[in-house]
Each structure stands twice: as structure tokens, then as C-alpha cells.
Image (cartoon, rainbow, N blue to C red):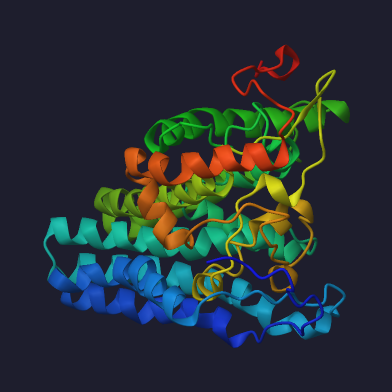
Length: 378
């Protein structure tokens, strides 16, 4: 399935209602908490599988909205990302309180439920945090910080804005999955490297202002305070078991995030120009997907080629691209992230596409194993 070359570039902004579909996951989580057992499968079924089916039913969305749409027309698009903050917190901590005061689910079921809640806070919460952190209003950036702290991954904001967007497609970006690298190796490397690179990036910014990393303007103080506050809240609700459940949903939320990160840039690299410089980021440096239903769930995150090309665009205005401008994923993120869980199957599907991408966009490069010395990670 490909995108037509005659994509409409002047369509009106898509209606906000479909992007509110995420709220439907809350009653699903509540049903799982009430019934346990088979109902624990409802969250993964409602995200990975339901939207995979919907993608095949409703197909592609190849229309591009007018990028000059006034902000006033985006009110309800923005509202869902802000409303989700209290919705997610009440859902996670409310279910924690309910489970640990009723004891109608045994401990393994409670763990499984909070692993499922990690799908909710990762697929929706971190995706919304990603949108919010790119915006200028302080309320939106604070909302992003709260959502990220609720999955113990606050440094993602600094890493994403200061490292990933600057170095995507180069050896200095840990989040750009290397060609041939399996997901589990990628996941371990990202967990090891990204927190350090995020802290160094913030410290470097402070150093340019002649301030030490201990200065109170370092956002890591806020990150640590928010994360510590959520851990204390979990302890007050359910003791150390509550902390364990909270950490469980945080881990699976981060697992979801990094699965998506793995898919978004796998094998794609920017051309090295010499003297430590790379070509500017272009739509070709991110995998694009135009599947309509999963873009409703993920607020157009799959239009990732345009997000990196124009990071300040709000999600309703993101453009999609044809194969002549950006590489296309064969399926939407729900299917692609499931494929990534099997490295051998992933390589079978994606490695030929990376090779085709190299041939199409960089036919002059014959040695893809060579890494310029100036580009080596310090």
C-alpha cells in the first residue's frame, strides 16, 4: 500500500473528535481492574490489535492540512493532551487504591494489570508528553514533565529536545537504531546512554551561561522532585507493594516508548559532510506511516518524517509524504512494534527496505560500514 503522489496539500484540519479516542481506554482499564482474569487482556487487545484491525478497515489518510491554520481552530486538538494528565493520574493511582483495598485480585493479576496500565501510560501518556514538550506555553511543558515523571522517565524531555532532534541519524544519537541492531540490544543501550547524555546536555547549556550543573535552573531538580513525589504517593497508597506496582507500569510505559523510538529511525542515517558536520534533517530521515486509525490513537506520531523536519508543528498540522520524499513503513506502529519484538523477523522485513532507501537517496555512498572519525561518540 503506497501513498498517492497527488496528495491534497490544502485540506482543512482534521476534526478533533477521533483524536479523543484515547479516553475510551480508561473504562477498559477499569473493567480489567474489576474483573481480572481474561479482562486483563483488554488493554493490549484495545491498543495493539484493535487499531491494527481498524488500520486495515479505514486505510490511509493521505491528506495534508493547511499549515497556516490559526491556533484558535486547534483548541480541541490541544485540549485532549492537557486533559489526559489528570485522567492518567487518577486512573493509575485510583486503580492502585482500589486493588490494594479490596484484595479481589491476587498479586500476579495485580502485577499484570499494572503492566497493562504501562501500555496506557506509554502509548498515550508519553505520546502526549512528546507533543506537549515541543510547545512554548509553560502549562504544556509542565504537563509534559508531569506525565514523564509518572513513568519515571523525566530525562526524556531533555534528551529528546537537546540530543535526539539535534543528532538524529548520526552516531551521537542513541535513539537512532543502528542497521542490524535488534530491539533488545537497542533497549539496553538506550537505558544506559540516554539519561547520561540528557544530563550532560543540560549541564553544557548551564556551563555556556557560566552556571554549575547544581544551579536551580537545571530541570533535573524538577525531574527528581516530581518522580520522588509520585513514588511517595504510591507508598502512601499501598506501601512498598504500591511502589512496585507503580514501577511496573513505569517500566512497561518506557518499554513501549523505546519500541516506538526503535521503529521510527531504524537504519536511517544522515550524510556526513566532513569536519564533524552532517546534512540537515530531511523527511527521508524518519520512517513515515499514513495509517488513519493508529494516527488517531497516536495523535499523528506516525507522521514522524514531518515532525523531525518541522519540530514546532502541532500534531494536527503535521504533513504526510509520498515515497519520493520519505521512506514508508509497511504497516502502522502497532504492527511494527510487535514485529520489533522478534529481531529475526524484523530484519527480514526491514533490512531490505533500509538497503532500498540507501540506494534511492544515497547512491553515491558505497561503504556503509565506514564511520567518520569525527562522528564517533566521545
